[in-house]
Image (cartoon, rainbow, N blue to C red; front, side, top):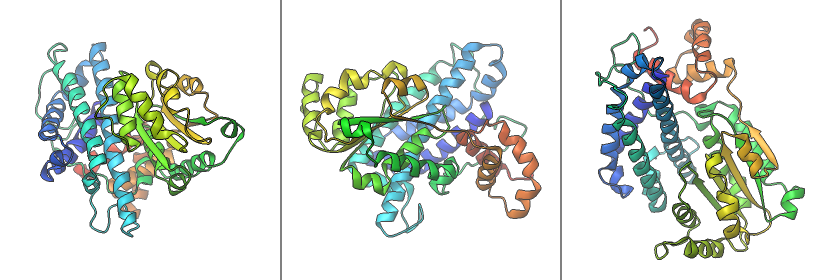
Length: 388
């Protein structure tokens, strides 16, 4: 776990460095937050070697590592959303590649609404990672030099992924996207009877649920079918007012004059009235599943018939709670697909790919079919060179 975490942190820190250079904090309205986040990520990296040694004897450290892993998955979701927005922007400029035509991943932050959303997520992530780091004394974690966890003392440079989005979570995402888009844009018995019907994506952390939901959200068929499209992340420690404000902002409304739930619910209701909407509730936990029945259902019940709700969750009980008409389970990558993904990340040529396949397959088995883990390991290996 520690090696994978080190790679996640390395990739994220490299991205933050580029963001600092491009003064993204100013674009997002959070000056100083990215520099602070970059320092915190570097400080946490210095704790990983000691945490790896002590986790087997200290369950609190094991829990600390799991919380850190969860935070890095959320960080990856933020970067992934930037990738998707950049691709969307490049296609509007007549370019078929993800980052061609001179359009960088961070160019999408010149959209004020999107930049504000990313800025808010960066601030929340900063607070979360700082809280994780500050527990080092209680856990007796010692700061060590920033070496990779493992035999090499060479710090890898983990590049920001520039591969197509399909490569980020495996080629199967295209099949899953097509299937879900067809499902969501085809009327069934429930969607005809109900104003809003739900579909759920279920899978463990790091398996690609959020990426899949965003691919669906930005699909041209979805954009044609649903004039109003909204994406919000629902955390365990959900704050209702904050969520309502986020949805209103995503729906193109203004919440600046309202601070109470009683004021925000009618605002949201007016925004969605008679509109066919597509709402993505990303990363819903059992602790926050009441968000629909207890809050949003009332506010969004006047949307046009055929509106859809897409829920992503790690817990199938959440999907059943939402009475999802379809529950799509995101599967782990097969050994063959996992090896193909790793080979792409390490940039092996055809000869090396065949020569190193047996070793590579054994390595990806340790990643348990999780795309993010494979990408992280690929970043480490690419930084060291394949002869290490």
